[in-house]
Length: 227
Image: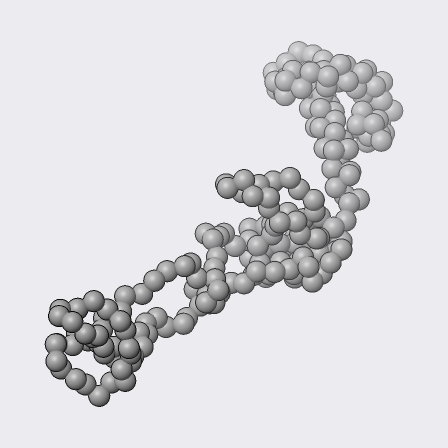
């Protein structure tokens, strides 16, 4: 319904019908200029000689304001219409646990404790120029759309290549121990073959084998979906 028609419908008194019709016509022109409608003044009826003109001016001013307001409401409703009919929209809200989602929305349970990542084909790359992974959407592949871990314990094959120092026991010349012998041909002082002894042993262990936090800096919000 047109805003001006809605306003005129509330005036059922025949004595004011003509005045209302004329005022609404003027209000439509004023409503085209929002600033002008907002800046109009409401005049005081007390102490005036022509109360009819003052009443008409006041009515015109108020009608212009209402007309401009209704026009803005209708424009907003038109812009929101696609979202009103759309379903499957997931949005984040900063609300309380008891009232996490607004009316018409419900908690999006699969997002609890998880980060959201863009699904589908993409041409994005990381800082090293490597292509980013492509993930299916939850609707297409419930299993493939979920992954990652909050905590992770490194495996041997995931560790970078590295080395360890080994501190052996030095053996003085002519000193024999009970360790098994390892025959090595080396050059030494004087003629003959020297057979140094290398003790058996292992490198001492370190570390606690505990998983490490695998999460980036985060901000927790409630994810809700519109059905």
